[in-house]
Length: 117
Image (cartoon, rainbow, N blue to C red; front, top):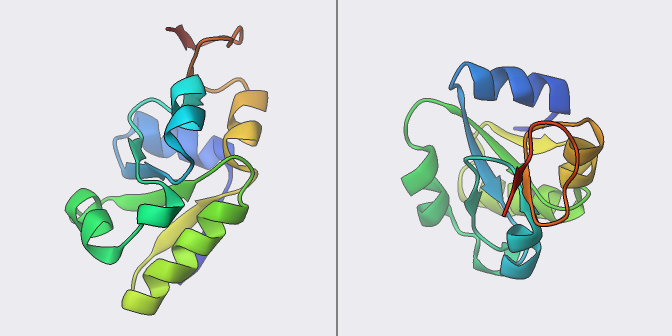
């Protein structure tokens, strides 16, 4: 089942080490800004085996992109492999994450909690 998760909940899951985060944007987008601890698997390379290597540890798996569309597609692709998967799509993607002043890494980020590269 595909679930939607908001930024505040994701922040709590990160703080309590309950989550794997998969970023399905392209490398250049990931280099510009990313959520600390996320793993990059671009949408065009997403497959069940790659995700299982990351997510096979009992933690929740959150998938995100820029705004939520590509990550929803990634969730749908993964559900085709295994309908029993419990995956979460980050509502609003990294745009919402950055707008909510969450921890990120960015060359141009000026919000609290960010690491400037």
